[in-house]
Amino acid sequence: MSYPKHLQCPEPRYHGDRGEVNASFRTADTPPDLTSAGGATHHLATHGSTGGQFGLYKPECFPQHRRTRRCCVDCGA
Image (cartoon, rainbow, N blue to C red; front, side, top):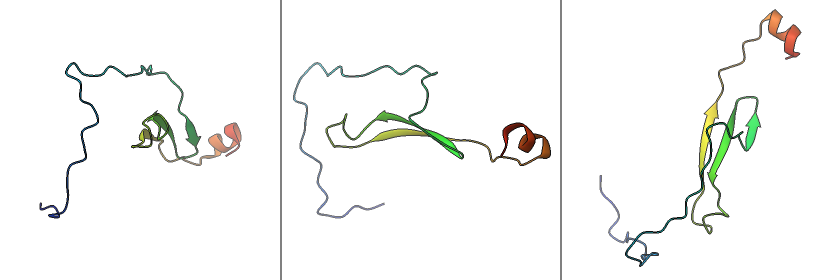
């Protein structure tokens, strides 16, 4: 794999010598931030919380909904 010759590394943003502790804890049972019929999305780091640098999310895909007579009667789908 080759990279363009003009590609440069970004300027360093942290100049300390001990590291930076800035994590937040999310339990495994934290509900998703967005939910739809096909899945859910957990926002781990939003564009706003990273100073506009990036966004980090975890998609969760649900199995396809099987339309059976029992399910349609029970859930109305």
